[in-house]
Image 1 (cartoon, rainbow, N blue to C red):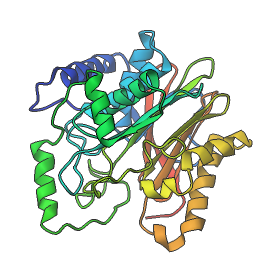
Image 2: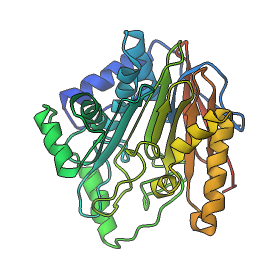
Image 3: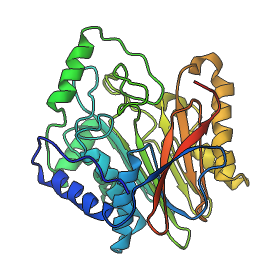
Image 4: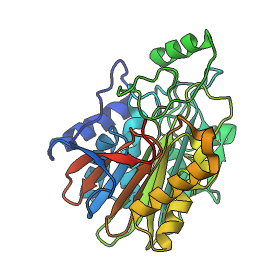
Length: 346
């Protein structure tokens, strides 16, 4: 399996210990394989799936947590914490690119198939937004806290407070200020630093996990669009858009331009299609085709993708444009990275 990138230039205990755990866990399983595009989804019996290549390291941490007796919620939280702590990932958590005012703001949601859900949006100064989201679920009567209220809650709950803007991210932001131009690029929330096929070609991470009984849980976390408007919240923390899980039906998560996902409550629509009898693959295809029909020329050059998992371990993935990849870990802990089929060519 693939371990997360080593932390550089930062001695924060939480991130070092987390990445060390992932590195140790990775040694127990073979390296992830990369396959070509598949229109039929990944093979059955998947236990953990996540968006993008860097999801493989998140899957490793989630699988390791399950092996130690953790719950599905424990697993998806542990997986989401990996990219949140990675200083080389500029679209999730620590070192995320800031909004246009220079603030790194985080969005996250966690959910299981019993209807438990917690989320935060526009959270600042706390690395692990997914853990704050879980605390919202467990310690409050609410499902979503935002902005200053989310920050105060995180502080009151004892989460370490720290600056999330790193010198590298600040440098990118100051470079962007020279033109203050923003144009979304497919497969990246980091425009204008998009490099086709490069390390920036990814955004939000969504994870879905199931156990042998077919129970399900999911998580989604992001720092959102680079240089977004202050206060912008995308699909990621919104239940039914960035993530949805339903007992006996499945779980779904989204990636890409969040505004297009929220217009159709994308993840909830995937689950509705699965409830109506479609396979995870067919359900993902249905919502992508619906977005294309609904939006027409407005989504030219825009990426939106969906990933779904049913209680039996069947996986589906589909996107508007080529480039969306996802990591699938089976019940034995073996991980394969797949390229999702797309509705359009580049």
